[in-house]
Image 1 (cartoon, helix red, strand yellow):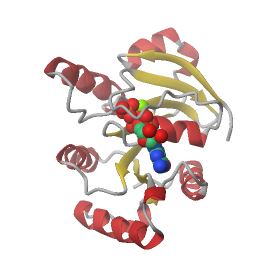
Image 2: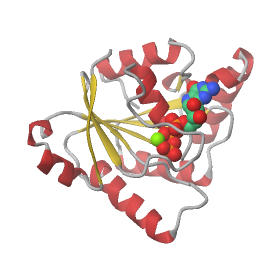
Image 3: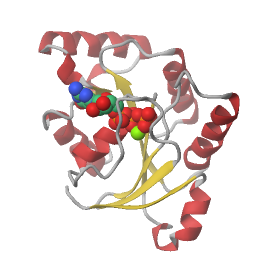
Length: 196
Ligand SMILES: Nc1nc2c(ncn2[C@@H]2O[C@H](COP(=O)(O)OP(=O)(O)OP(=O)(O)O)[C@@H](O)[C@H]2O)c(=O)[nH]1
Ligand SMILES: [Mg+2]
């Protein structure tokens, strides 16, 4: 699964497609989740080409839609939400960028919704999850940084988060950039189009 190329960043998906008309019909996979949850790291791990997506220990690293051409269509790294230092103006522009990709978008193939496996979903996570349900959007929940938990803890957290979200635990994938278990499951689900 190595092919990936960074194309450009944009504030709105329409601007991006104007600049890259050849990408107009590509199915779009969008990564969503709070700041620092591991979105950019997942891209680097899933398509292992010398850290193509910028990651950071400091939250708020990804600030625009980062668009990548991949073997599985267009992948879009959305800026993380819930970064404490974000101003009102920045939150508004996040909303605009997110809406441009997530709403009324016939090319949207799947939303990868990332949650930290160690913590219960935050109020903003819950809000976004409600939105996914309400809009009947195709999504996969990934529980990131699983390597920071023991195996029994991983399973306990999966059950607990599933209960909070009223999701089937079997539909959620534990993901770690330290091994390939999550990556294998995600690849299978994306190729087969099995979304929640
Ligand atoms: N141990 C471990 N660390 C991880 C994993 N995934 C991400 N991290 C670390 O978490 C930090 C944040 O990762 P990013 O990928 O930059 O997070 P992001 O969601 O893109 O953050 P924003 O761009 O701010 O929205 C980095 O220090 C990563 O190395 C994982 O599976 N295991
Ligand atoms: Mg990022």
